[in-house]
Image (cartoon, rainbow, N blue to C red; front, top):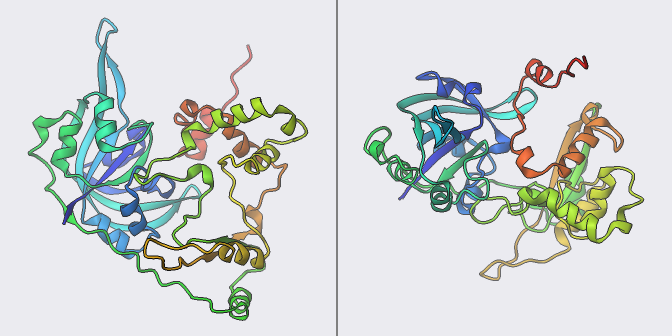
Length: 355
């Protein structure tokens, strides 16, 4: 049995009640779920289902705010501080908040450690395998470590014997039952019988390995659950534009450049889909892959249904903004507030008085 815990880190603790109340209800964006989680755990926890929720509820939780610099009265740097609480979560479910999919849950705080200084980030980033951004981002990781041990790594040995008990748990096996297709006729029958509303559009994507995640190449992770390329997006694009300027001079939009760059093998934020189910089937079957036992690996086809009103064309403002985020240096991306309410967002983007 392994010692495992939930590590939940947030950029602004004021947005989350689990930093202010001893118990209550809160939520967390699914898009930030299982970052810095070892792949052997992550693969067992996805896709999200009741087994995943039950497993997460069995684990202790370390709630942390992103470390921030604190100065003394003489403006001398004291160190990095973080607000840390220990607790448990229950009644997990999926929900939608501000058009973003979230995990909603009840929580109970068992020990409020408080606003405390941390040890050197070089130490805890390495020991906890947190990747290049360390704790300086919002994420929910599942880590194979005990609560007492993670507090020691963070330099909080004095609190190592209080709070949550060590949780011993085994991650659930991913036993999702997918439909097995034996021939092209059966495949087309499944596709044609797929439920689709009059106001919906259907797209398809094929994977040669059923274990592949539905994610662009830029967001793929290593075995420890850390991004391989995401933090270098802007630098990779700049380098390619520098060494091959003539290749991209005729591309009118940033989206065009990203599409073009994919053909150079550059990891991008684009995910290819098709309206033709046979094209998706081709990509699911075109490469025969085998596992370590030389057994053939299954491919799969993912069916994506979306409201027609949500589809954006190449020249839309939305597409332009998302595509041009690729040029923004990583240090600025990490500071973007992506969970603002609409009124709060408007307050932060109001044009100042030119006078």
